[in-house]
Image (tube, rainbow, N blue to C red; front, side, top):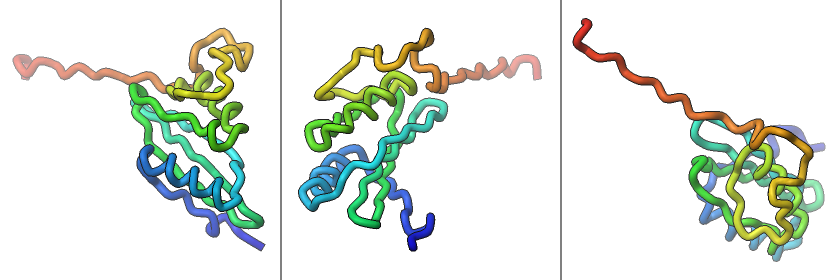
Length: 128
């Protein structure tokens, strides 16, 4: 039986990620999930694939102002995960095979899980 430590999360660049996913598809792997976690100024997006009883996880750190290419041309089911991370976390996914145009969920707030950037102004040094 596999345990949690058997499936590490490997950090890669978004350029590497697309090539990795293409190769995994060609080798018979399937997409298990795409998950996003918000941090101030960026999202960590993790892509998990599996084959038999093996899972691999690849993570990118994506600044909020950068786009990531869709994997729905490789894994059609990716469009569902991509619509979710786009709508809930504000991840800019481009080229989705099926784009719900932010109508995937019935929510009132745009990107409710996106972290806002906090700007801290430095006080003038005159008063010191």
